[in-house]
Length: 101
Image (spheres, rainbow, N blue to C red):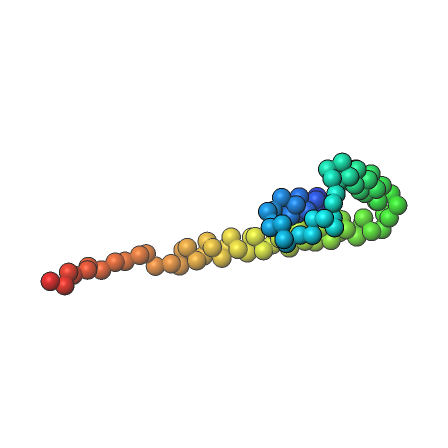
């Protein structure tokens, strides 16, 4: 899950427009083929990460579950807050506006 998030974030960053003077493009001349080879290399390396480091993957799964539970708890709390705020809100009342003639 983290790997996907990093991938999509990187993709968004790569697609954001920048001015030519903001990047030293001549220093970082990388073509599409090199990029594809890089991502294939990363994907093949990451696919075997959990078999090489089972403890790290177990910890990452636990961390993901913990964050998921926290997000769910906060979402429920926010839903309850919004429901009570809507119940306790006064209806909109307006007055009469008199013209100043």
